[in-house]
Image 1 (cartoon, rainbow, N blue to C red):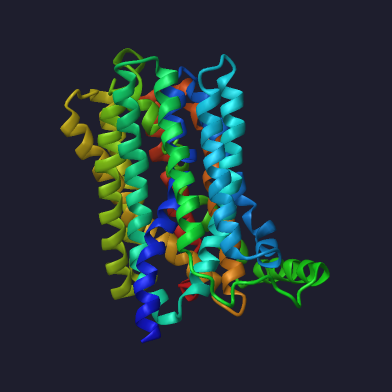
Image 2 (cartoon, rainbow, N blue to C red):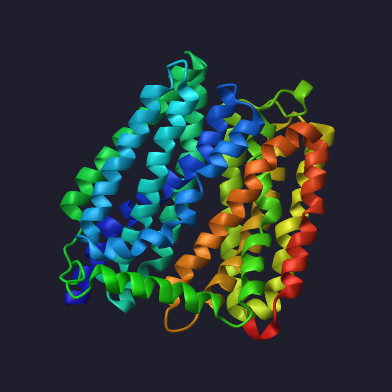
Length: 419
């Protein structure tokens, strides 16, 4: 009976918790790119400075032990949601001022650090508040609502900003959009303060002191780098997504730039539909099919097909940049194909991280893997805008295809006994 009560109650907080986990990441990594492009920031600056916003997720393992040590995860969750809302309000407040770029970036940093901390607390709370059976039951639910938040962010919020642009100053249109986000996170904060359960196991580690934390922390890193084929694993984590790490920073500027600059000249709302809605649906379907395939053959069977799926669909951007079609349906289909391939191909990457982290310290090692995952997106993304402005869009997308060699090489290095 208690099991059924807990499961029923889970429906009241798990969907909203993972909406709140996904939205800040989507906003910092994708919506900020679209906004800055519309506000006249160069591709070089957009890619460089928004890529730096990956840093909180890169260094997340360094402060995750203190989330366990200090207060409860429930408190961390609600506190971070309040800070995220404050950060979004800060972005909204600074956009109308002349030095909006520097001030809004500072606010995005607040959102990024708060969001990375929220991730640590939310994922930990999920395991404390549910038994193993219910954790398995809700894993698909949490993933679904994480994706729904992606569509809501990259799709609905971008469409909203685009519609507002038609009737007011662009800076004010985006300011209102971020005030909406701030209000949403204030609502998340109030709702979760009331609804989140209070499991008895959610408490600070009473028998853990700072000395033990430091000792275990360094021990975790030593054991991570002592794993068999560690450097091959790290190279795989850094190189497998090299093409995508650069591409993701340029797709939206390409879709938005006018035809005479090599872009497709889409409106903000059209980008919200093509990339933020149709594209995310393709990404989700690709990920679902990838998971089904992987469950029937494992990574050993699917590594190469998934790697090719990750890189070959990027050809659609070479074709789009060459022909510059004006048909929104055609553009949406092309974006959907690329995103489907990425969703399917990313499955191999996600599985490899799980395989690499196996062992007595699996949770801590997986957190370090995700740090390398973020680093692999951050470093190439920083130079993507500069490269594009030097090459133009068509040559840049050809360069992305050349970078596919790194993905293939990373797969070739992987040993069969690691799969």
